[in-house]
Length: 144
Image (tube, rainbow, N blue to C red; front, top):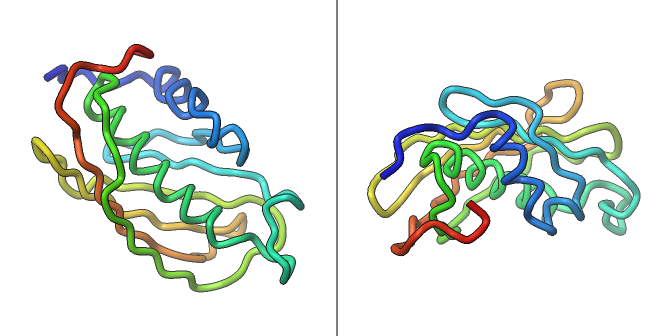
């Protein structure tokens, strides 16, 4: 296994290479020793009928934050997939930005567990998630 972590620019590229992440406007705002922080701007198309950010946006941010952190940790583009996610929502967001700060709690040979704190632009906690990824067998993907 490649032990070199991805650089900050490589980490940003991995996130932006996924079309769904682009659709939501996700970007890596910070890289940490144990994870990453990604963000997205609240725009009208991300709101639900109550005119607050749809819960799926926060869930997608949490999922991506762990996935991108895992790619960075592995230092390659090994195939990975989400196998489970639990999310709790604490407060709605209507405007500004949403930040998802992931922390890799455990990276094993097959499973990775990450925790994500989701906050608004005023650093108020709006949710938290626990995400499990599986590292699939096989060579790195062609995008490496």
